[in-house]
Length: 559
Image (cartoon, rainbow, N blue to C red; front, side, top):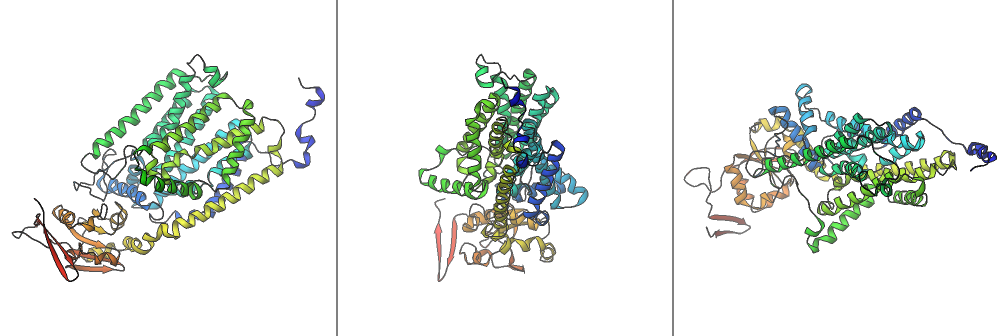
């Protein structure tokens, strides 16, 4: 028991000269809005909002925009996805995650016209809503508006989060729904609200439909509910018991079934149409050839140092984890269990998708919830210690310093993604393509014409910008005349080049005999079969002619 004299020694009296900012829920919300606005301004969001698809992973950005373009022009149902890249069968049919955002934006564009900034703005608004929901979750547990605002703003110092929060990928929307879902879970548990818990399940399900790995939060919620039925539940959850367990469990299992059904449908839809366009499956660690493992590890290490967080901030996370461990008795067991499941789940995702981690930082985007979760546990242990240090101005000044340095690091990484080698291909080759619509029409390349674009190795970057369907240099198309002629058979009428070095390829020279025009760095050639047979638009499948300087080589196939 505390003596009466102890009860009259509040922290405010002992350290009144150190007392810092004390904000409730509304004040903390206002503080967070100010901080997020300053961070967004430093990231040049006001300029990027109106930018064309470019920068790091413009490949994936163009895929999303291409689908939205087709939903606008073809008025397709949401379960029928199309892209400018026509694939192996020449249909352009392709699906991966639920195309909720491309479909919604496509419908909006039917009224507004093709306004790409609306797509970015939609993702941005969802991302801000997710950060606000994170603030509400933390504030519910800490009862401190300043700390809750800091945790949410800390997540926004991740260069990866800052980049995709104002972009076109569905991964950022999935992260936002996860964060909103956790607030619905926290408030639903606190208020014993069945509707909020069902809302949380719906949000986690939607996140999983937008990105399969985001279903981790739904699995964690179901795992905690299932643990509450076990005989040793006290060890895992303490005295806490979730409310409305049966209905939450049934709804969660239904959500998992919906997620599984969608990806099964997408796999079936893509069969024979667009294999290799989207990954619907895994790239586990054990499937990577041993000679490639080192390359993948180096790529992942680069993401850890440059994309996930400023390296110094990992020390902040480590310090918070240490505080949580030393004060573990002050933290509810249910939170420890949830955090453990989160860590194990993120580790499992890393192992199952290890092959994708070298080049695709966004595969880890929905797992960054580990960062605020670690901060929450450490701050909870510190707050419940009762020293009041978290409400002193030196402590809050330290939090501000962390935010400033983290934001500056993210700002510099954002600049890298839009101005260095990460955006070189767009700046030097693809930027004019978005301005050559009239020039293409003048060259006779009408909107129905099928085009081959080289040396673009993505699926849709150049094709989306010129708004023409066709094929790109994916899978080395420009290196194989047989493949090129097959695309001519599938209706390709024009060849577009954006880099003159590709014109030196011997495999392309026979297809460059009929130039029709040029726009800045882009050249357009009419495609005609250089080896007609019987006057038809076919080719001699048994003969491959490779023109080389000073000689010509004719090789016969075994067919």
